[in-house]
Image (tube, rainbow, N blue to C red; front, side, top):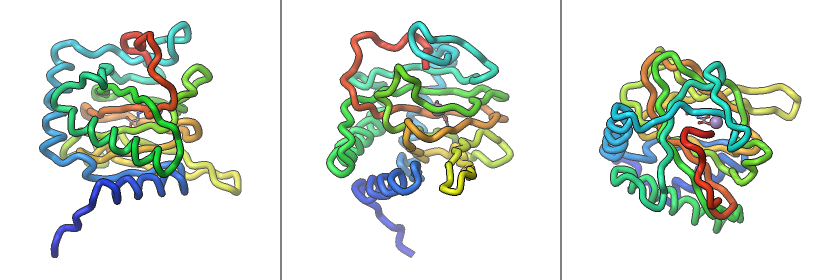
Length: 221
Ligand code: OGA
Ligand code: MN
């Protein structure tokens, strides 16, 4: 059987529909394996060389480290000057922002992105990606970089979906190489279950404000 070839526009349309109807969506093969391999190498090299910091929670004066809440290490990326390996990913995200703006009128104007590494045994407890001072975050995007990840490796992204009858539904997604998940940053709570092997991702937020002049603190949320 012929492989189904999907254009970027079809891909973005699937993501938009998911976000509008259920608050989240995901696409496998957002990146192909060659692209993932290159980003994974760049991220793991930088991690080994000490380029990451332990992630915290809150911004600026609200910033704190708390490894009972999250145990990942992160490295912020400059999207005006991304690591070479990340260019295909950044380009596709820019295209996605243009498509979302044309079709969803979200007014997305900026993004912030970081590499994330969850060492074995770490997690990120249930949370929302916006606080009062980070209202600009509209859509969270996470692309995973882990080959041969199986359910026994843990590290699922668990999304909590409020239902109309007041109950809550959970969706668990494995952090599979090339998979992109995006969801409404303002409304959907989620967590990362404990990872039983080192878990790599590139995580970001599409925002509706111009960049702030102050860069985020090293390692800050
Ligand atoms: C985050 C987050 C989820 C994931 O960094 O805020 O929720 O699957 N990450 O890595
Ligand atoms: Mn989050």
